[in-house]
Amino acid sequence: MFVEFWEPVRLSIQVASLSCFIVLVTGIFIAKIMARKSFKGKLLLETMLILPLVLPPSVIGFILLMLLGNDSPVGQVIQWLFNGPVIFTWFAAVIASTVVAFPLMYQSAKTGFEMIDSDIENAARVDGASEAKVFWLITIKLAGKSLVMGGILSFARGLGEFGATLMVAGNLPGRTQTIPTAIYFAMDSGNMTLAWAWVIMIILLSFLMLTIVHIMKR
Image 1 (cartoon, helix red, strand yellow):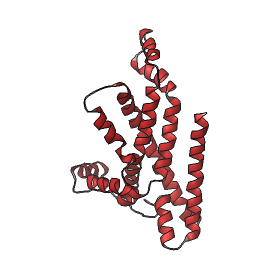
Image 2 (image 1 turned 60 degrees about the horizontal axis):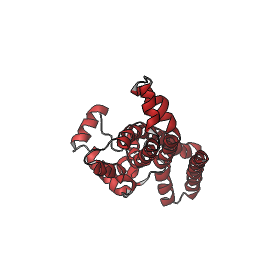
Image 3 (image 1 turned 60 degrees about the vertical axis):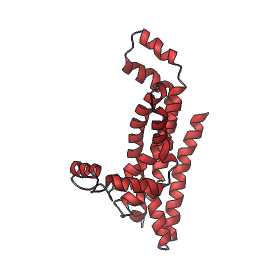
Image 4 (image 1 turned 90 degrees about the horizontal axis):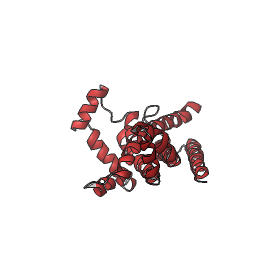
């Protein structure tokens, strides 16, 4: 009973953690560029970046399934890199969580970067600081609260992802079964005890994440 309960919890935390790391790196990098650069097509690109925030999970799952499938060029490259298909593996769940969580990280990071007074960064450059030092010692520090909040929200979003994950990773116990998919199939099979246990667990985890966000806003 304990193993059956714990496996989806462990996998969900593992998937959400890795997807959170990916969106932290990519979100910070892209948001830094978008916050300070003006170029043709910026509005269109930014719309595409935050589009997963409003798309139905089934649409995201369908697109990922077509993109990562064995018949697509991307899917064939991934199959070569991983020595096998990525569909219906735990890493497919990571990809789905990353796609749906990225807009939250991107928007939070971009807001944080836009709030920084560029004169502070320019003063550091005048004093001889390299771009790397300006970024790590000034930009990241000043935008730190927004970045942490974006990371926490991204982790919570990845933890709760269901629709896209189910389509590209399935529901294989011990391999791709996350808490949301476990709840759905436990309820479908009439195992309400396990379903309630997972519901309580994900509520507690989500409540903890949101509590941290509210504390940081003060």
